[in-house]
Length: 116
Length: 115
Image (tube, rainbow over all chains, first blue to last red; front, top):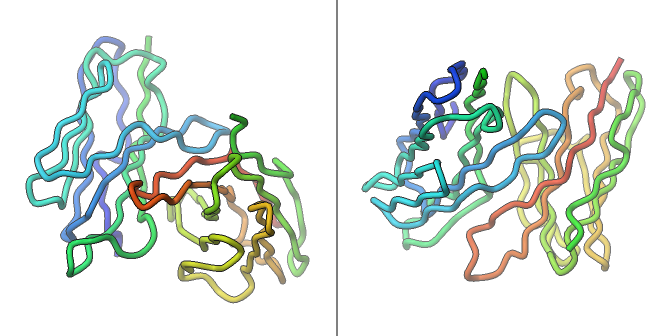
């Protein structure tokens, strides 16, 4: 069972389009991170969201953490070919006392292709 | 600061052999984690080392082992290789500060092919 489900698995769009990818779970996370991985490279951290309902913007990328801390979304405005890559969400489970427990858990990722 | 380095970048082995992969973390980072990435399973956590001690371990067989040295450099070893061990092995370092959220800084990975 995958603790973090990402959708869609694959997304192919034209340059200039908008898109949203999702990261969902039935478990509560103390924080969620988004990474982008390009072919032949390791993932690169984009953002960390830590508060339920939090929204963070990174240029054309908008990240949201769900109010219940069980889900997150990444919205890209006016996608460019340079946005092509595998987008991974990862989180640390929230413990019963409100802290963090265990290692970082990754979703399987959304493979985005932006065509010129 | 120099990033995380991994050696070798590519490796081809045959079933039954063993392999050792090496990772040098970002200077000042005391935590090193290892992950296995495959198309079917995605990124799966192998283990984390902090100050030379294994801190967390994923759900992998005992053929997968690791260690960390006093300079924070880490190695992982896979014995009795199986075809299914073919994967990209990623090393990541983290400052692991109390105020951080275990953000991972990844190396480029070692692509292991088992024939």
